[in-house]
Image (cartoon, rainbow, N blue to C red; front, side, top):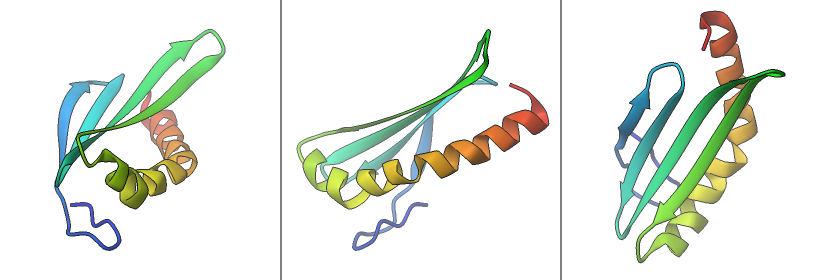
Length: 91
C-alpha cells in the first residue's frame, strides 16, 4: 500500500516483470494511473539503472503534484538501494 500525503492509501500492482532485468508497477488513483518502470541493463561500462515514471488519465496533473513529484524526488535514494541489491545478488 502507498499512502500519499493528503490522499487515501492505494494499492501498487506489478504489471510487468522480466526477472533480473525489468519490472513495472502500477498505482491506480481516482482519475489517473501511475506507472513506474525499473530497468537493469548490462553495458560495457557496467550496469545501467533506469527508472521511468509515467502518469496517465484526466486527473494526472493532480496526481503528479500530489504523488509523482515526491516519488521522483526519491529516485536517487531508491537507485542506491537497488544498486546494493544487484551487487549482492547479481542482475
